[in-house]
Length: 335
Image 1 (tube, rainbow, N blue to C red):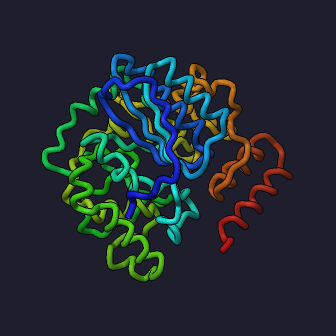
Image 2: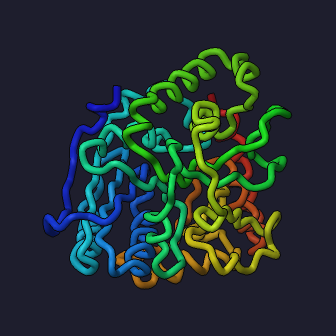
């Protein structure tokens, strides 16, 4: 099903030295900048390891971005492989709030199965802040589970999944340390895609699973991987919603944090983000090949447009604020 999902592969490998660890990402073309800063943070904090990075992307990456990845390969003596994905395997899956790249995590195991037995999947909206942090991931004992994951934080009313009463655990799929062979053996990707196609075609089927499917791929993974995952400490995937409305008092993260996950709609590379935790991303941006890249000015999702409207309200530009409010309404209800 996913063996032929890659239509082109670009290998930026510098040498044939054996890798100590493999990390994979699924991104849209517009996320090359954030994932580049994330990779910089990983490499800067793990200089004594040989890490292979696998970037699965929805379109051809611009030459200027490829050259920036090449800078990382040369400076840190690392390997970066870019996989351009054929999206035909993911047609008719909901991508209104998340890009279709969110579903690439289902194709990744089939592209890495002849390369490694285990790998770390992480979302691109993260940053690594702990020196030697990747070694902690290498040492994770899966204890016969298919993946190691982190429990999603407190459920709330702003988009996090709503569970049935009997569901006591729910993990965030933004970080998964995966036993690749067991994943493929148990057909985890296929089962998740089948559920997603079912609920997209028949929305009333959601009640059968007990989820509202606001997080789509994550909900499906929680259904299929129930009782097949090991829950590990939050330090591996510290969920930080950098919304001043909800988390304005969150000034710092716990001292043992390895990865910060900017999991809300506000991101540290957005011009309209004023949260203090954005500093972690922006500090690594300044030492990355993307140091001269401007912060994003134009939101693409309706929730981001609402935040951008608030940015203009804060700056006294009510005409532009109204413009983005209208745009957000049109985006939300566009069929």
